[in-house]
Length: 174
Image 1 (cartoon, rainbow, N blue to C red):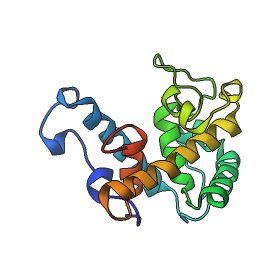
Image 2: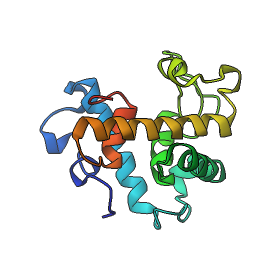
Image 3: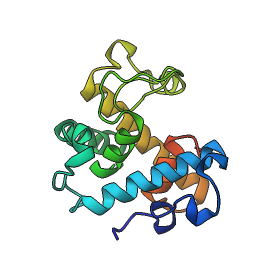
Image 4: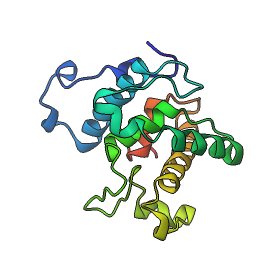
């Protein structure tokens, strides 16, 4: 088990909460997916302050963006003062696009991190660059940093990255 991961969220499954996955509210289904992906990433990546080893397997499409993730992490830390772990970005990316840079949702979310129209006004996303992998990763990492600050205010304490991921997906007060 890795520090910074909420053990309840990281290990939650539909069976553990006593019901069918699809009977759960959408926010609960998202939280389960987030918890499982973050738990999987955290369990496989060592050295939280670095990029860790390759995840391989079904993470290969996400792992190939490791250099861009590391650059975004450095920029977000310098500009916003939040050290967003590489593994958290990778877990979100796996859920959002599985590493496909041209992914587009029916709701208008774009790219690797599925940056969305609701974020555009708040952070002035340059939509002409939304499919640029490095730019999309940077904007997704910025969103995670902003959601961490929102989660800190909401909980009145330092949130776990699983809680921050939940805010990324619209759970809680995020």
